[in-house]
Image (cartoon, helix red, strand yellow):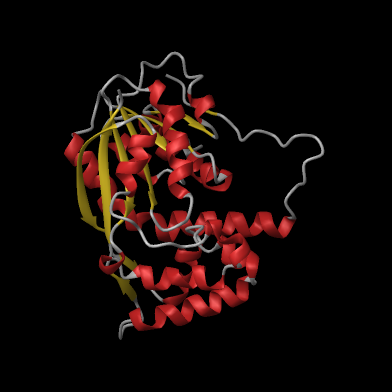
Length: 297
């Protein structure tokens, strides 16, 4: 099977184009996500994969696949993976580099074997649906955690509704969310985003995670809950600069940056992180994430 890449849709005529600076910032944050932040969620990915015993025969549709680390881990277990990233084309480009690379000759065989498990990297669920030669998916994942940005559950529910028809009846769907604020040290740092955001644009600001966030999303998407769990995902960084860059890459500070300016957000984020800097200069914050396994109907 030949892997393919579906590019991001071109802008409509007359649509405003991002400035060169904005594009550079977006690419830098996507790179920081891939190199610094995304690995913090590996315990979540592995816990879900172990519980569902994924491997050869698994046909996985990853919603919000980001820069592709969760897909890479699934493909290394033998799963055939399809990734969809509707919100961050820069991350999707990095997922392409990881999963469908153009390797040097010495590494070609290894990469070709991995790429054989990667069918499609798409900007949109509708593009993933065009992979008609594939059987229906038997696992859907949505690992981008919800529960810290107002409105994120609405976006996820809508995405799941569109994706569910692509999966088998009764296929597991994994949803992820932040744990209770009192179990997530990072919550105190994320409050910087809420404090700096303009109240008139607070729809993207931080909010505390709620106990039934994931169940409510599953219900609205027409899914049937079928088990849940919690996973420790500590955030550990080599130094303060890496911590700031990693957290900014999450997208949770975008509204604050728009309301103030990047320098102000960076300064206040660094100040909020100081209590978590250890003697050796590393930054460590304990967190608990929750996941829900639901089933398509």
